Length: 200
Image (cartoon, rainbow, N blue to C red; front, side, top):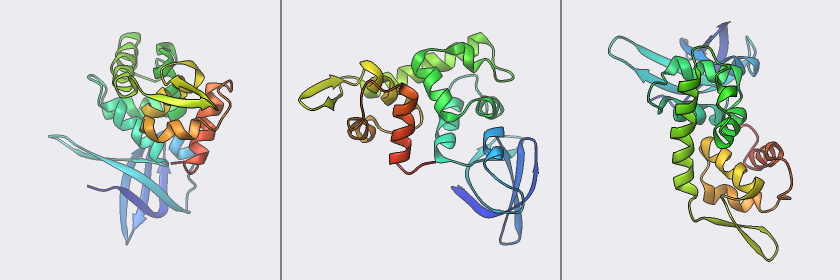
């Protein structure tokens, strides 16, 4: 299984990047968000996912581990194939997908080509349920002397959204505890991602 490709970006067109590694050009299907983060002719790192079907082997590449993690979560939903996953992550960032799922905002997900209301609602139902199971009965010290269930407040919503990105609640909770729980969810997510190393 290929984990990543690191080489020169030799060709790019909508939805596709070619990374040359050791004289071999690897063709990766990509999202528009990934393509905004890479530049033709430069050394490029893409995190990859290989999709093996009866009639084809497809390679998908993403500029961040967050995007790869959300892609894997999306295609785990019944009825969401790799192409739909790419379509969603072409119009929404990983953070926006995570927020939409954690807040139940299915209309935002329908902005992607090929995603109707029913499929968007199924994505939210299946992924939010998985996140909810992992957060059940866990707590975090949100301020000195206080303990708050992760399911409550903006910190809880931020943990849910970060869980969609592939972060364990136990890992992000101590980081979120450093921040003001009154901050907007988007800021809490951004600060936590920065604490974990920016793009990853």
